[in-house]
Length: 236
Image 1 (cartoon, rainbow, N blue to C red):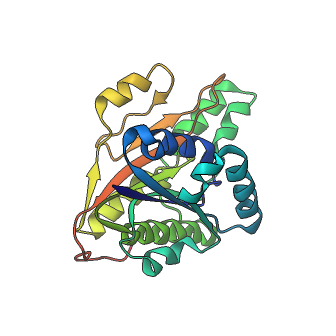
Image 2: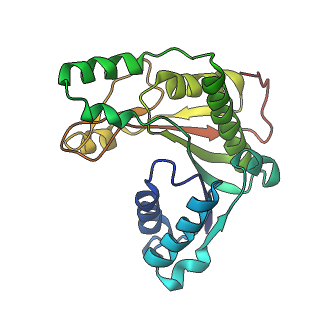
Image 3: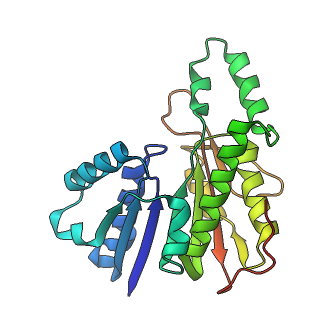
């Protein structure tokens, strides 16, 4: 059985090695009896070149044929390769919210963190461009997966406008998409290491950064494409 993966902009949050590790362990290793094909796309030329060197350094030569690296605009992959992938990970562009950890005033940092999670969608030129980019990347990812395929949307921000609001808008805009909840037993098993925020309703998981730990912020949500054609598409 062959499983195809697409990682878009894998160095946005510098988590590529972690993603690669889990994919190799769970989907490419022979003991799983699955053959995985991993396609990595990086739009920035410098990071693209760095990605190639990283793969050559960490991936065994015998598995390099299972990987491919491209330098494309992620917004066009869905139209270029519709339904070509089983799973797509979108590591979306986002702000460096982890900097709050280095705020001298701890209370000020916590207040900023709380305010950050409640930010509304901004209509400034810069923020509008970023949100349009995120929306287009997410739509491209949904077009790139086959019916039944899964898209994972990940950011390194605590902004609701770039996290939950994006997912809620996608669910409202496409009838052919459904939200996949993260299994509770998995969340429980990670709670000793990560601090999770609690959403009502839940449309993903957000890891809150803590001092002394290298994780966070990281938001993750999963969507499954149901239909061959998206129905009742609404522009965001």
